[in-house]
Image 1 (cartoon, each protein chain N blue to C red):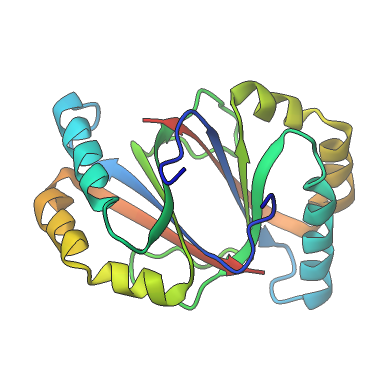
Image 2: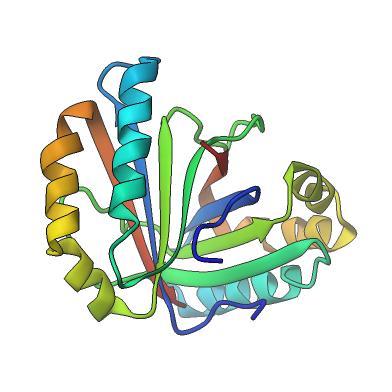
Length: 106
Length: 106
């Protein structure tokens, strides 16, 4: 399906507390790989800023965590899933800032 | 494929110049539907903020434009595609702010 419809888009950006610390970056990526095991996650991508660089591009974040859910209820259950709670417990000390974008069909 | 790998994630957020103007919102959505015809776009989603509301959630934008490309080159060609240039020409007066996030595999 080329146009994604009737889905729930959850896109999170993380800014590491220790910018450019490779160990912490690896720990966060490892944490997200574990987090990706949550059953209601339909698709996910663990990213970093691309090389593109224009005025309108936000590229100060360290990690992009993109997740597709079937619907809003699946995102809600993900928030309280033990795997998610463990991720927050294990990894939240790694970031100083996190920004979440939740979108549904316009 | 549950984990998206080896792709280029392009996620744009638009803030309308005339906030809450339904006509302009429709025009922007219509413009994005036309923009979605660009051949190199693998998948896309036209979104609006979900009902979720926590401190970390950015929900002040009006429209989310999420696009998956096969690679960085496809995103570059999209930027100069006549369909994209026409979209900017027809629709850029509708928004006051736009923020782009381009991500590749971490």
